[in-house]
Image 1 (cartoon, helix red, strand yellow):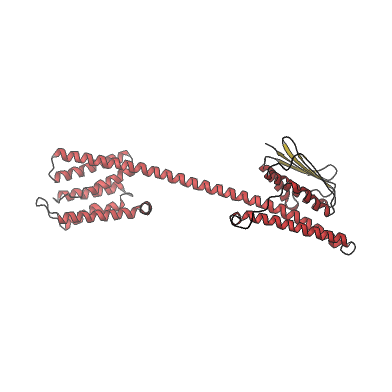
Image 2 (cartoon, rainbow, N blue to C red):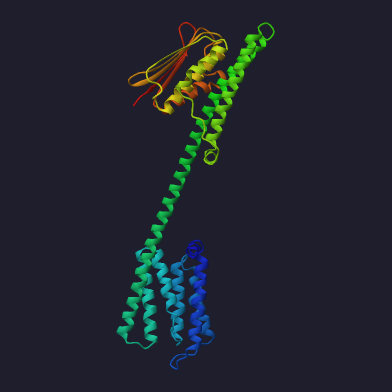
Length: 384
């Protein structure tokens, strides 16, 4: 496999090594075998042998000039009366390279040149004319056929390389999209956790500071709420971090905590009530049997809407309704008169996150001011 890879990556080096090897073989045969009917292998023969072999190092880049050059050198070599030996294989190899690289008509012209070279070799060896012609036709035809096979293989390999590159690019794009979606999901989770819990902690801390001297029990209750809220925030943050390190969790001490579901709505409402906000919760239908992802979406939308209501509408009462109907799950969060939540406040990421979560399940989120000056958020998720 390593040798094949080297040939693919360094074709010029391979061709040059082949040319040098052929030169050494031809010189060895010409120098050792000296029949009396042929001219002795002298310095001119070595020079002509070099002119036959060395151009083959560029046979892939300039196949036609290499074929013409090696063929001319061989014809001069044969005309001088030297032993043909292996020399005619230089033009044959050059013709194979031409057939593997060029279309039909240039290859046909090269075939004529190659046939003349092989025929002259047979004549130099004093072979019968019909045998010399048959050899010229057979060798040229075989070289042409092998070159055509090589050309088709090269074209197929090029197509495979292009397809592989396209697949690699597509895979890179899919990975990038997956990473982007995962970053958005994590950003939504972080926003929901941090915004809600920090808002509750900030409000409770303000309440505790305000009544610290005048109403110690209320201050103590606010501090207790801060402790519980911060512990829950830490637990949720820990769950997110575990999800980011799933490979580490596989060998850890335990499983990550499950994502919050609709069974935790009561605790969510209780925290808001502990902060002095009047919150009503109404539910109907079998909510606990809903898929966990759907429950998490409803929970996060309610959590974000409640956080915005507490942050922007102050102590105004909030009414929450979560209902499972035959074909949909709906959630409505309404707060009384106060400062309505708008997209421009806090960067608008809360409402954007709600809509993105709902979109994942084919649902919708509508949000806007109410006629009485309050604000309403409505979520609808279809059940398939």
